[in-house]
Length: 397
Image (cartoon, rainbow, N blue to C red):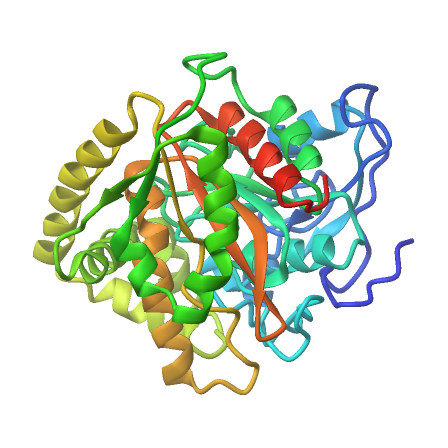
């Protein structure tokens, strides 16, 4: 059994399953966020009351089966923020995983355990989920590669939901080549296979939102990307764009979260850790008019972004505007980081776009990621481009 040096795995008996076959992932080990079902094991969804009120899984999630059938070996289930509703990675019931790249900082959530397991080198890759940034942010914080695929590209059957029209199954890897190889197993063929990506779009709002030190540190990676895809087009957003994207995403997601989980919460009255109960209370109280306005904004915003990217263009920007918050950060500081981060992660979330984050730099000793975003259905091309950028930057191949 692998020694869990960072507290990445869920406490209790370890879900270990040998490969079901041979294939592209022979010899690889992986872990799975504890919202994916594994037959015979409980799915706790990060909360003891959820585990108490749900029996062990009767079947394994199809995306996990695909990895086993491709030759990978499952070595455990990883911790998640309760009901996947948080971005710091804190879990008072199971313990917050250590950020292996910056032990004095949060690992990021809600796929905190998967990011920590990959960052520490406990597994070759790990499955997570991303609704509002839950793969991209912990990948940036922990210094790993990560992908949020196009919405709907990977089956979420056998996975606990939060916001169904936003939820995606993503994954982390310590090497860009492994991130791509997992994609070759899980992803459908691109809608325009073999098509090259470019030109490069630089959304100024996302860059000015970042801490100056982060923007400077990521500039060499952006220039390496520009050398590979050619061109650069600056995209000027309207004043307040990121505040709008954050607020509309928050409202639309909250309504879905309550529709998805509210019945169970009302019936069970579960105990929640700090912040989680408050987020669900706000979701329950969401004004329907605000949620409707958010859905209308989403349609307009999605149409514009998809049109910009339709010809093969790639957007690039800081995955997170800052390194991971310190473990000593106040609740107000954590919330400010959440709002600034989700204003940018909402780009892909609102429009259903694929986004890959690359561990491109460090600021104050902590990792920061550069995100690449393409049109829906160009996931494989985006992974191939990320591998080329990683090679140009001499990151782990």
